[in-house]
Image 1 (cartoon, rainbow, N blue to C red):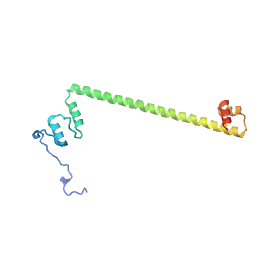
Image 2: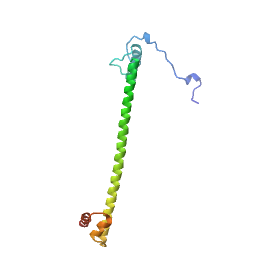
Image 3: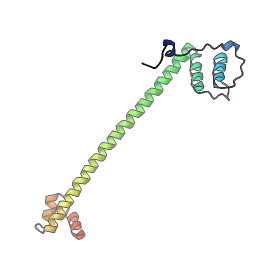
Image 4: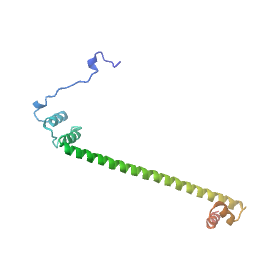
Length: 149
């Protein structure tokens, strides 16, 4: 099925690294990891992927039990604050969208009233006062529409 003849060809390959016999000279990124595992430190010139995260985790593991609990509480508080900020931002965004939708609807209704008033003015069937009363526009708005025509 996988194009392999033997089971051992499917399984991962394991390597045993004798960290204690390492000479502390880092020539490549694998040597940087071995140096880190042996000496529990990272030199400034190390660039191996993932070493910084490993060092951070090791630093946390080296803390006393009380310090680890305090650190965990601090991290939990940071997560809570981030969650609250995100919730507040999301609620504000939704409120803004709703406000924008309502404003857009109101603008659309207003434009529709103006279009109806313009049609009535153009037909000449009603005077300005009756058009204003019918559409809900002010007399000044209807007169402005008349001057635009």
